[in-house]
Length: 228
Image (cartoon, rainbow, N blue to C red; front, side, top):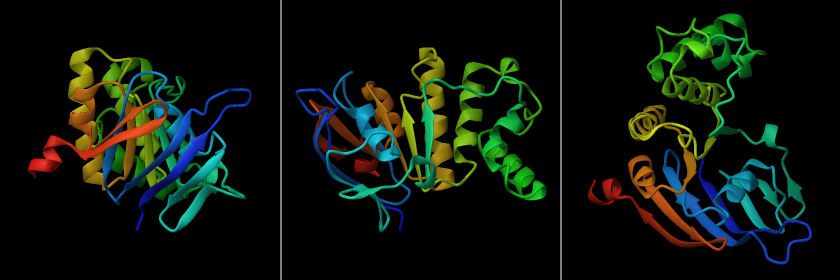
């Protein structure tokens, strides 16, 4: 079972007096979507980077299923973690079509298998008729859905989302948050997102973790989970 477990995570940047993460612990079950909520500087993006393997730990462990990704004497490189990433900078390849962007991480798969997976994902994100379009021919929301499909293409065990909607206007952001939540649930994808927007966290997540000063001060189900 792909459960994400963070055990007493601690991160301290070289030369810094205080740690950025000061003992972060949580467990996210298979297929769950959680949001870490908090202001800038609270440590939420550092937590994502530590899970992804971009920041070394000064203490604690990251486990995905029964596999230790980071811990004392252990550091699995980011590309070998089975973790997908979606950032606020969409960063699609401008010279590739939407379909080619989605399939970029599948270049080593047989052509027929790759093409089937690309079609499947474009349909999942509601862009099955737009695969031949270039990024500049798509709206901001459509570009972000292409980026989501690209992140899902290799079938990651865990998807990390770092404020993926912050560059969009409010109306598009609200609509896309709901759409992405539904896409992730349809895919059965375990996901952890960070945001500073409480409404976005409620719309996206099954669980919300409130962070302050490098610590998790609250971990609770969202209203939808609590009443469902």
